[in-house]
Image (tube, rainbow, N blue to C red; front, top):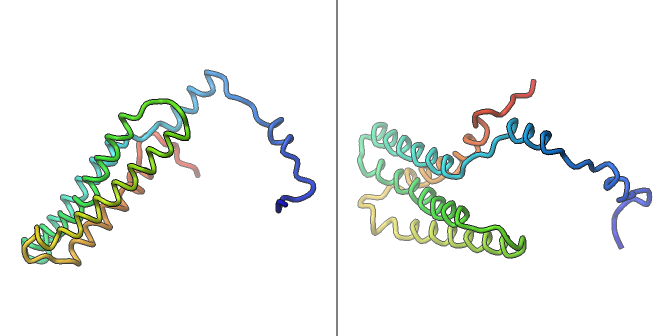
Length: 156
């Protein structure tokens, strides 16, 4: 039993579907260019360095800078590994592709958690606040990268 309205007709959607011509597809791609995953990882790395330097300068404590930098690294390193895995992925079965994506996402998550668990042993005089700030700021950077990507038309 479905929750669809009785007057819903799936065939109407199929009839309204119009495939794009090659020219229309090319025009669409030029209006909405793909964002490189490597560009997002690079922006995250730069933001991580900036956050680490800011913590170092504001607090006057190098340990706060190292802590923020390590928090950023706990996002950038797994993200770069995930990006490399996805770049090496070959076209094929969609189901297998989804399994690979979710598997690598799990690996990314486990690596991030392992890096956070190792932080107290690796960073002397660890500042958890700085580490979490670096982690969160860098983690959210991809939203900014997607919003300010070049070539995207702005709507008024």
